[in-house]
Length: 426
Figure (tube, rainbow, N blue to C red):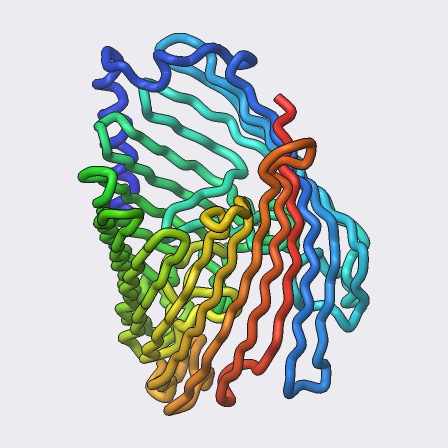
């Protein structure tokens, strides 16, 4: 992707011209002195009940540990360092009939494996406030971001360059060739899309975010999944502080996707966008969102968190062809009522006007959805974080989702119980 290559050169030139500037590297204390070592314990229970299916229940329970080490940078104009991770998980419950929740890997006999483990790392270099990484990492760009919605997080293998040389401006570019999925220990997994499940040999992206001030930011990105699509992203976020613990915010997100090269997913020409408004008043927040897919194919992406649309929620992304969807959400922070660390959330999303009958007949989405399809989802969540004592930062989160749809999707009820305990070891 020429855009990425040019951007990588531009960032390198910016870094080279900034040796005399007061950047992050000038604050480096050393490889060991700035090191951190963190351990996250995560206990994950998930049950999905498919209401109108013969194989109606999938149930998994497992415990995982995420050990993450990040070295500091050596001192001098050019600083070098390493990051490393070790992730492991063990099955606590779940048999052959429970396969499908994506918590642990599945063996060749279709059974959930008793345990899993993986190790990986990156080498990194920094000049001023520009950093280059190579290896297994967790990119967070809106067009390519690995997910962390199950027991163990995803990682991706490749290069990533980031720079914050200019005040309030963050730039990044990346080239990735493999991904390690959430229920896999295979670091050279294929870069397959979430819906069409077509493989891209590589994913490239470039973009950044500019903060005009604390309450206004703009992000622009471009990406290419080789021989699958080119995707462009824009985001405008604006927050308006009001008097007496009140605020009003607006979040506009848009993706433009066009097929590229061999067009392995078929013809793609979609513009997908969402607009979310939120009013916060004291302990309460009320949010409304509208989302629209303008195109005859599903909005698709690679990497579990590579979707910033407002109506991408616990089960559904509300991303079907020509779909429009509405969301209403309520959040409550109980700290104002004398219970710090306790919060509640409820939301309802309804999608309709789905029409997949005009999809490319030779493409990956042919026949996936009919005409006048619709669905809805209701999510409920309770979370508590221990505020002090030996168990400080221990969190317990209970999530419930109900989804109902016409023939193109599943009717299901879902429950997740997630317990996390983070520890800083170094």
